[in-house]
Image (cartoon, rainbow over all chains, first blue to last red):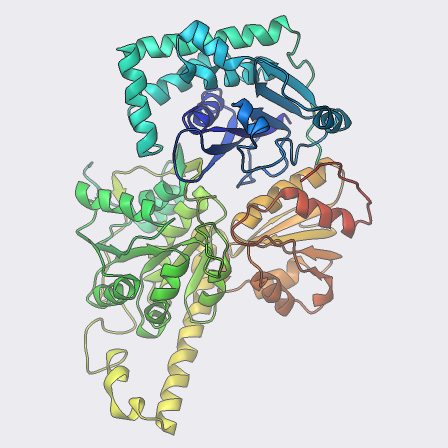
Amino acid sequence: MKRYNIRIAGVGGQGVVTSAHILGNAMSAAGKYASLVPFFGSEKRMAPVEAYVRVSDQPIYEVGEVVYPNVIMIYHPQVITHGKSYTMPFYSGLKENGMVIINSDVDIITDEDKKVLEDLNARVYMIPATQIARDIAGTELATNMAMIGLFFGITRLVNLEHIEKALIERFLGGTFVASGGTTALDSAIEKKFKKKQELLAKNMEVIKYAIKLAEENGWVETETEEVKT
Amino acid sequence: MPEQRVVEPEYLILEAPRERKFITGSQAFAEAVKRANVDIAIAYPITPQSETMHLVGDLYAQGYIKDYYRAEEEYGAMSAIAGAVRGGARAFTATSGPGLLRGLEAIVSWPGHRIPAVLGIMTRVVNAPLSIQPDNVEIAYLLNSGLIVFHAENQQDVFDFTLAGFVISEKVDVYLPVVVATEGFFVTHAKGYVDLPPEDMKLPPRDPYKAPVPPTDCEIPPARIQRDAPVQKSNFMSYLIHAVWQQEIWSANRRAVKWIKHYLGGLIEVVNPDAEVFIVASGCAAAQGREAQRYATMEGLNVGLVKIKSLRPFPTNELREVLKNAKTVIVPEHNIVGWLAKEVKAAIPNSGIVVDGPRVYGGMTLPVELIMDEIYKAFGIKKERKTVV
């Protein structure tokens, strides 16, 4: 059984919840299983946001927030440096042999935290996701795409076709309403790209780049790890 | 909306082809109401129930329901449901936590008034400090009033229990309101796979004359017992009338067992009946328990799960039978009082084997790891967790 219990921590406006939905939809498109729970306070930019996603090749029964994740994704460095998070420290609850993916262009983990992560035998991958989003898509708003791209690049749970299907569902489906704030943000992105198709293509480019990054760095998981509690 | 044709409950619930959809628990409630030939829905909004009743309002706009309105508050909503049902309509409402307690005076009078309605409960904290998260202590308040109470584990249960709820509720030998409770957010706002029968089919309409009591006649019970002087006064006649009336309510509640078995496959579901250690749970705690049972099995431990689908009628005999050889019974719950643990202890002769917990409070998620800790303890296994929380 391949099973990842993921906690995504970021700040308002980064598309934490949106990308959680895309993660879930991609798994669904691949005929696999996912469940997700968003968690946020009053919606505003730069306020803490968390989303929890469970993905597996087997049915998932469990519900609710992920208290003991085996994957932690940090979308914004301030989650770590400013404590902009519901869960402090950022690695709280991380299980042994887990993985942490951090969006940062500089090493922001203190020596003390590094020791904890080493003791847990955690793999830590740091990528400049915001820079990648800016360079390839021309907007920071694609940061979330780089993050989920890297996750799928490492885990190989789905292929590009499934991710694209999930993106189409999310951006061209027209039925998804997460919140008023998200809708407003969507229309801002749409204006920027004029056409939704263009937005989709740029997002896919970011995802492809992140997948390649995982490959080039040798981060791709080879064996199926068994989930231990 | 598609033209809906009436089909027999047996066909719609048990035989019709089903298509798998990935939907939220709120949508699952609405999908059940869509196929239930509901006449009227009345509710007052409260988080996390609002989304369900919003979707049911959409059904009214599309023509699936004949009437729909927002009541002044929950006491009004629950009283209006009683009025509509007594007038012959099939009715649906839903509420959460504080809203449930506000409407409770009316709700606990429904069984005695023989009101066959379906009430959705999306659990939410009721005790201070207040929160909108899914603590389920409110279910304890529903267990002693004669209501039929189902507790849904996931989105599929929400759909199945609600649709079957209308049918069971209106059976002449039952004729009681059915509560379909589930955890707010964890089920209502999260998506899961639900197998749905076609949406162009619906239940037969309610036949208000197919009833143990006439719906609107004020000269005979139940309306008459409300206004007759001998009943209103405190005298031995009134006590006697109350006694026989309530005894009949609880008999009717027991008579629902056969219909629950027929439409929902039983009051309980058992995974690994030959286990040494059992997890007994209802609602979302059963989902967490199911996960723990799977992990335990992967680790070679002989653990079983008993999911309680129906809290009223309570599966006393079923539990006694399944747990007769159990060494330990773990009862995980989403509330501080442990109402299910008390029920389980009262049902079996050797209550000492029941572990009180694990429990989470204030609507927190129930980590599977906490259930695993109890499983390890039951088998005398020592495990150290490195994780920092």
